[in-house]
Image (cartoon, rainbow over all chains, first blue to last red; front, side, top):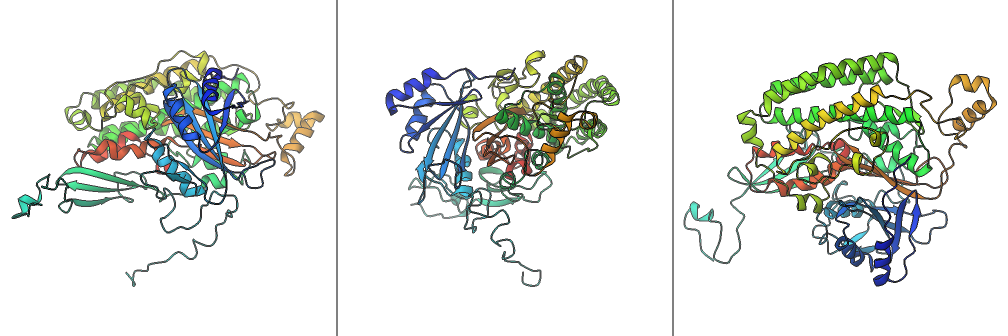
Length: 169
Length: 412
């Protein structure tokens, strides 16, 4: 039997008390809630107080051309409770232009590099992040390569990369 | 502000204005090509004499866009890319990837497949811990220990070669099964390994665990407290050495771990020595898991049946039954394949390095719309400046080795 994590109904109920009606979606035993981007950092703070102490991951999905998608970017916060082993996925949807959300680095220090990676690859700006630099791409790179409108082969950055030969150096 | 009258005044830590002049600090570039980084990563260290004041980790030298490639390869093709993520335990990545795919598709594996995957994942854990502990030994001057560890890694690679033909990049799993079933020869080789390995493990412990030099180099170095480990999203042996008891094998029993008897190795000190001890103990527990799973290996088919239409049927089924022929045809054609829901799910396994998970978004065809990998190395590398502050330059390699950063997984 595949493992199903413990239910999080009471947690969702206490979130709904503060942030209005929340409809949790459950898929394969995983509960997913959607929050307004303005509410999400506050909700994550509340969730941390309610016992979700481990921030497992922050990532993003670009829903360009996705069937039935209403928004362009979907941020994903994966949380876990190290005492009860509950898991919860928090979603917040953002749109062009200037997709941005408040940073959760004040809550979890582990969010620092995860948010840098999302900024680097998707161009989501995290307000209040202490050091929002690119993480994996070079500093002078201009695009955000995991966006769906960025081609797999790149836009020729590699061919136009400045080459330093031994004689020049 | 006080004016420096001689060079000693410059080194005074507090200036009158309460600000510190950092002019006297050395900046040392460490990597991306350095024998002690083992992989391609870079550190910019600020030194006061031999003491590290601050470190700025830098990554991306090995970035190859694995997540972008994951949006263009089918679920079965992408397994070859996961091999190249954490290349010191590639089979564990294969298991993680297809565990996530099967969670999205809702495929339930056969008992034999669950046990086989458990065995290979634990062998991968052994080979990973042998390398990471061996490298800590190597970096702190214990070369013999490293050779002992590497000899046993070769034996594990021999097992993998017998199993699937590849020593290093195995690409062993498939959606709904594995590429090759266990043969009697593989089982024999694993049994032989289980007999000889504990002796080597004892030798390794005798060489290093109470070695004065090694203990002095690692004890009290790079201390991570329990609260900080959780706050900074550490997982795996790094978190368990700090007293976090989280281990997905126990907490969210996947594959066959629910049936097996084993313990979770934990320590409370949180320093490099504790991380070494946790890895050593985890190897002993892995041996127990492999032994139990191997002796209780269920009989029966290894891949899911043709009714599920996800794993390729055997040649016998293709040539002798219409369902087999249809299933083979459907899976081989480019415009057919799996039925993937418009849904998204996250599934993780306890990889040797920590929680390795994939967040997959399905969009109807058998290519992921988004294949996010949650790599433990990134979060552990982010810990590095926090751990090294205040220690000496020679401790850099000890801390780096004990975190077991694999740049290919770091950058993807």
